[in-house]
Length: 432
Image (cartoon, rainbow, N blue to C red; front, side, top):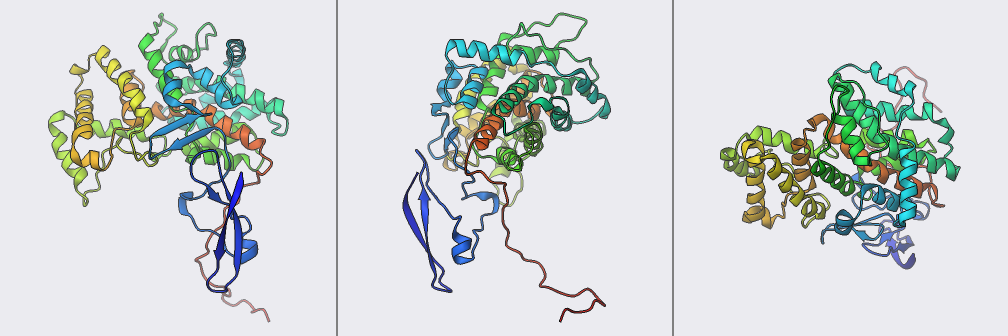
């Protein structure tokens, strides 16, 4: 929606351009600068795109100052309390909550796609035995297009929908198999008598030689983690998916690109960094030393899992997941696990210490999700895999929205060139 305009004046030339202001239903408005170069010969310069809206989207809304996160207008608190992950998937992809019948049909469709092509499963054997599960994820997801090319025509809405269903359905199977391969255990086929989360946990931890009993609290915790990580506006990996998709590439390649971006420690690896930090601290007795280091501006040490780039208030996802974390640690007996004791003491200090409160360095979702995944027996190198599994539906929803956007164009950021002026190769004839 465009109502207001902003006039930009080039003080060097005196030229002016009137630019429209694009307004959304909530949040900050944006100046439409598409005619800026044509009228004034200028581009905008915004490293990291901190002040640039790359698209219009109706999927997710964040108010970092107020600690608000909405999926399609629904508060994350309400979805976490009342919804399931697959219901959230339907909401993100189709825009509305499903009726009971629609949800039942959607679940049935997802279950029909949980298996992997046997040829694709053999791809795992091409990786080294010690390959990182995220490296396997990038390769396997990218290879899906070689096996499911009947749904790669991005101009066909039915192809887009089928590929979306396949990605949501197959991601737990791919993720679990990546872990199984890394530890040398046989793959477990999906069991469509189980729910989405139960199926994943079984494929992760079951072995053919014995029965596997699913812990209901583990299911509840994993369901919550998936819901809280399903989408988060135009973050680095989502922007990567959109940029990749803008060229018209198939959805499997785009999602593989998103996984590759998520792999970075500054993005999807944050909860893994929390556990590494707790391992370094070792015990609650060592906490004062590390707190002092965190407060020292000259010390590069930072407490991981505290504060958030977007949320200048308490991360709403952290508020939701905190109780689940405490419940899980209590059931598993955290008093016998020094790392968990260290985490709980760090949490107490962060919520009470004047320094942390003044700087709003509250525990974030990565702090609690890292503890939960460690308590469940998930290895560190699989933390980001679970993040990718959760975020897949968000990437898909953003991709599908982009495919229907009449304004979408192939991504092509500009630059401010700072290299050499034109010069001649030694011995070359100069142009006259």
